[in-house]
Amino acid sequence: MSTVVENFGDALHSRAASWVQLALGVGLFALSFRFDGKRATGPRLRPRMGGPRAMVVLGLTAGVLEVATMVPYLAAVGIMTISGLPAAHLFFA
Image (cartoon, rainbow, N blue to C red; front, side, top):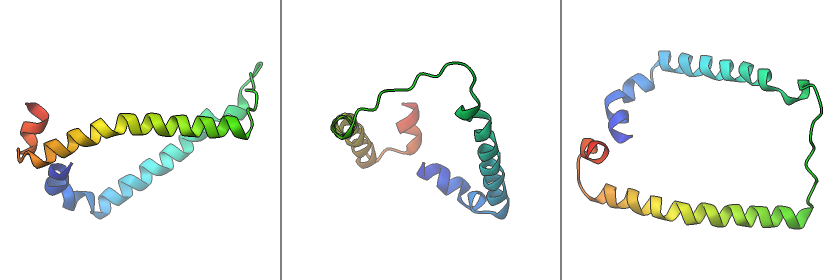
């Protein structure tokens, strides 16, 4: 990502890029109304509410799984960062 920012940093901070980001944001906001679930027809299945204990267990489980999958990823990023290789070698080796 640093290579992209170095090469296109000025273009990404230009007035034109800001207008493109604004247009994309407005377009995505408008598109979100197309997927509004309130307009759905037919029978809807409503999940049973679990209560506070179920929500705590769900949150803790999601946190443990996130940490367990994040640590190897962060280790790999750290190894690639300190390796001293140019960015092209990291992606196309």
